[in-house]
Image (cartoon, rainbow, N blue to C red):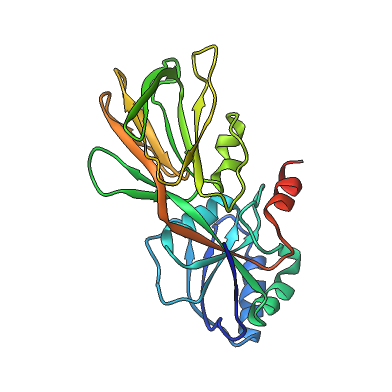
Length: 269
C-alpha cells in the first residue's frame, strides 16, 4: 500500500543516526532541513529508547539495520532512510542526492509504502512486533534443536535443524533469502517460514496467509529468539512461540523512482 505525503505536510522531524556515519552527512541533512524551514525536534543515535511521537517524518542515516532499530524507536512514524549501509533495501534516498531529496520531500514528493509486520508471542509477556523477521536458532553451535511446527493449530511436522526464520515480505529479502526462502512482493498479505539447515532429505519453505498462526515448539534443547536482528533472548527447552502477521505496519518513505522489483534487481542481481 502506498500514498503520497502532500506539500506542506513536513514541519517537524526527527533524525536517527548510526554512530558510525560520518559527521558530514549529518551536517548536510541538517543544513538542507533548516533551509526549508523545518524544525528538527530531536536527534538520536540508533538504539535509544522511544522518541517523540509528535513528528511528521523521521530521517534515518545508516543502513537497513538502523532502519529496523528506528522502526522500534518511532512506531507508526514514516521513516525515510538515507542509504549509508551495504544493502539499503529499505532506504529511500541516495546520499549523493540528499539536498535534492529534502527539497523533493518538502514539495510533496514523498511516497510512503506500508509493510505488514510480524506479531510474535512467547509463553510469557506481551506480543512483540518485527518488521523484518523473527529467528529461532540453536544456542550451541555443535547441536541441532528439535522443533515441532503447527499451523493454525494443525500439527504439521517436526524438524531437527539449526532453527527457523519467520519473515515478512519486507524481510523475505534478508536472512530468509540466504536460507533458501522466496522473495515475496512487498504488497502481499502473507509471511514465510523457512527452516535453517534442516537435517532432512526433503524440506521446503512455507508461505502462510495473513490469518494463519504458526507455532514453533521446542523439544529437548533450549534455543535463542531474535527479532529484527536485536539481541537474542533464551527460549527454554520446552518453550514455544506463536507467530502471525500483525495488523500493524512499518511505514517507509521514498523519494527516488522506486518499485519493489526494481529494488530487488538493483540490490541482488
